[in-house]
Length: 94
Image 1 (cartoon, rainbow, N blue to C red):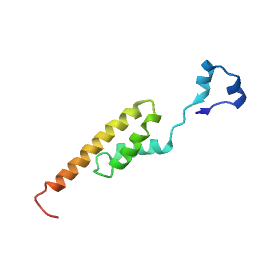
Image 2: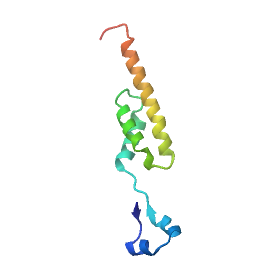
Image 3: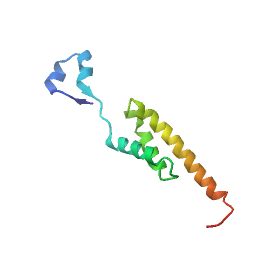
Image 4: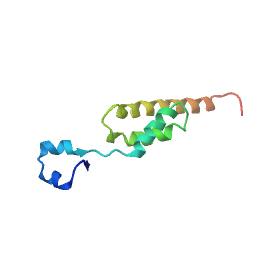
């Protein structure tokens, strides 16, 4: 938590006003990974890496980003499984 005021104001405030003086810190890595996961969720294996990292950071968010990280992870897993199945079931050799 980061205070939006001085240490003296935090020390002299009560619990009701303290809630408005503190800000929850959100990781830059989590934001970037979720943004990359949204852009790359269609790509097998490439989109899976930022999706997993963004999903691990999702507890820091309280809004739609938290739900989006779960949706993007599911899409990334399905696209990776489809890509692997396409390679394994392909009758032609490369």
